[in-house]
Amino acid sequence: MRPQKKKSQAAIRKDIIAFLDATSGQVDPKPGKHSCGIRHRNALVLATYGGKKPRATVLEFFNEGMTIYIFGEPGGKIANIKRNPEVSAVVYEQPLDHGAYQKSLQLFGTAELITVRNNPRLFRAKIRKWGMQNVGRKIFSPMLKGKNLPEKEIEAMLKKGIESLNLIKITSEHVILREWNPDFTMNRYDWKKAAPKKG
Image 1 (tube, helix red, strand yellow):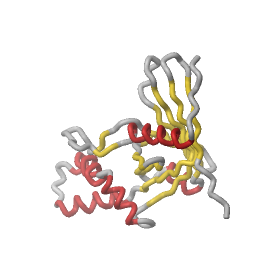
Image 2: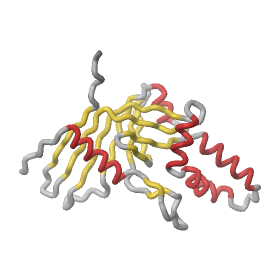
Image 3: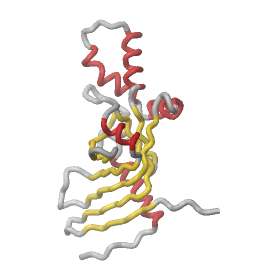
Image 4: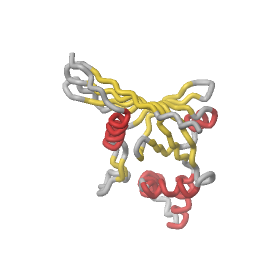
């Protein structure tokens, strides 16, 4: 059994960000016929609890450093976050391969709901950054095919659909990075957000 390397909080944070950068969704620079405009990589499983039943949802995610962003349709996860912003999430390399070195990440943090109503500037900036207008257009196109709607009406429907979304922003507070080795050993590294300085 190999001994686990010691790592500083800064080194663990750097490894977590590298893993998120390598697994989060990205804008597809050359979308083909069957691309929605996002280069899909690993999904994230988001766990929420609003006081009645826990809910786990598989979602596309984006990241900026340790901060996670998810575009979510109205539903149970959004209702849960409104009642309780404390969330947990898991990202893991797929498929599991015991013959390869793989990583997984478990995250605990606080979720904030950003909408076109409560923070239009940030909401629209992230819509532009990750090309969600193009994604929406691609996803809606089969529903609109053959309806002979004027372009202005299509754009209004697309705008309404995009603006019905919630942007879930998750600020990481505790992250566990696991490294799975081919010899069945596992390294675990914990990163915790530093407590604010007093005074």
